[in-house]
Figure 1: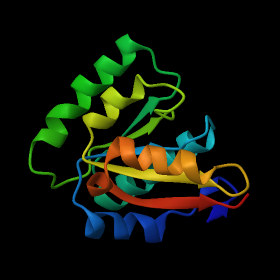
Figure 2 (figure 1 turned 135 degrees about the vertical axis):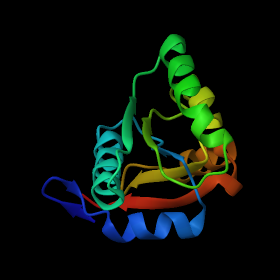
Figure 3 (figure 1 turned 180 degrees about the horizontal axis):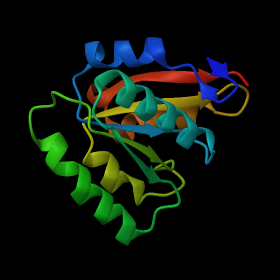
Figure 4 (figure 1 turned 30 degrees about the vertical axis):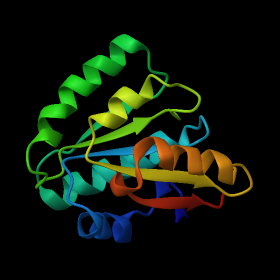
Length: 145
């Protein structure tokens, strides 16, 4: 749900661990949009508030290979352990537009898709699902704004 400062993610935050336990969550959109970072930021902020330990927001937009490798190495240890506690939320470019993002997606436990009504095409959304794998996709947020 859009709100003044981004998204109201309370319900989403509580549902995410029920869908799939995770230490590192990627937020990705088929479009290049600042809304991806806004949604990731809101999740990290709320998670930090509720969990009382920091959940690090990682800005993975406009990735180059060097930055993708650095992010992958940073988050991979968290996701290689049994995912028990959320530690990272990563905002990522579309892997369709920027294939370098695939390296970071591979290092995450779970993926949340951000779709924009009237902008995101079904073929692009399906392609992202194919890239990340259905088993790692925890859901989608439809931005109606």
